[in-house]
Image (cartoon, rainbow, N blue to C red; front, side, top):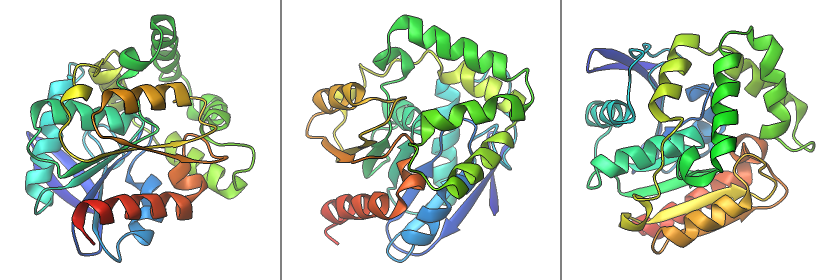
Length: 265
């Protein structure tokens, strides 16, 4: 693990390989360890960089009043310190929201966007009552021991065909979360709505979803595809929200195919 300091926060990250920079942004309750299969599988052609978002993994917790704009600023500072050249940004779930918040304020920095199991923010993709249900759920969970609620997440992230070892590994990573860090991230982005950002995206964009994703269903995927000009929608069959873990070979192949089209590789 390497560390940089951005706006007074220490940000930890993993790096592997050489080539065009591919930056991986994990989802809620996770950290860079969730990307083990991509750090291994894509580093033959790319410089793969996976951060621990502020409040996650080995990174410092941000202040309680952290905002989405602060989060985008932290990512911008991280990229300036840790990445050479225009990065390809790949965000998973919450990480896709961070990528869109970042694009809102720094549209000239990324070379492309790869939005996985993505939303236009919860408020931009889900009914208001579902947004409030999810918000209340996570707030309540942060007062509970992880062994009480992390297992409840697994059926919403994986299909019943997933390797039990992969499910167990993911659960262990998620259980290692920072309560104060997650609370700050929830404050920053739980009510975000990026529908106004989508039509202005002017870099190559891939939307990658599992066909059995129950958290970011295909209706969300198709609406994102409709709103982002020229975006490519790719569906991986028979897989859920965590396609990068459940079917890493298919996931990595789609990422590689898209980046070859962008970079001419």
